[in-house]
Amino acid sequence: MDKKPSPQDVIYNVRNHGRQPSKRLRENLERMFEASKQHQTANGVSWNLTFNEYLELITQRRMQRMEAELKAGKLKEFMKGAKGYVLTTKNRTAYKAKIYDPTTVEFVNRNKSLRNHRMNKGDTHSEKSKEIMSIKRTGTTQTEETKQKISEGNKGKVLTKATKKAIADARTGTTHSEETKAKQRAAMQAYHAARRAAKEAQNGTEGV
Image 1 (cartoon, rainbow, N blue to C red):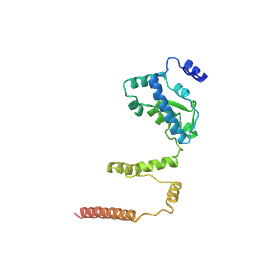
Image 2: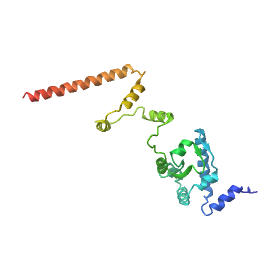
Image 3: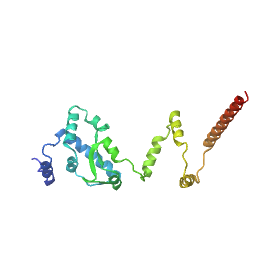
Image 4: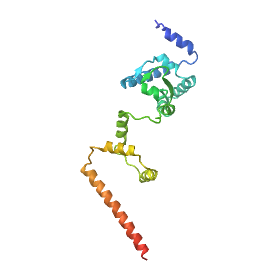
């Protein structure tokens, strides 16, 4: 005997007549919904979104695109790409509130999701975000070209007293390892040797 539809299912079917997902796509969307729910709730998000409300966030055009990708056997690949769709908060305010409901989230492509979460002036990274960025950068090195660009970009910049104090406060109590000290000494020796060589070459040219 078929399960009798709930009042919520009836309302959803009336509202969304003509853009119901196929059985196969619905099964995929159910898995995506549950995976997102588990991931977000594990990160402290208050989840107040039903599966039917989730479906209502999907436009007919996006539903058709997913049906086409599924038919071609490329839905998984498509959804992982930059143009693939994700359930995401509408802006950083909603993101910080950590509430998922029909008014705070939307079903959009990954590029739009990234734009939603761009940091604004005055925003700061959480300690968890800083830790993730630190781990990702561990072991990476910058090319000489990148270093040169950074050097050129910093030329002429003057730090404010407040910035200098913040840097000093952050460094208070920190100590360098012997390896770091050795590298610093070697770098300074090389720097001064290069300056002496340049000065001697200049003096030699002037004396000719």
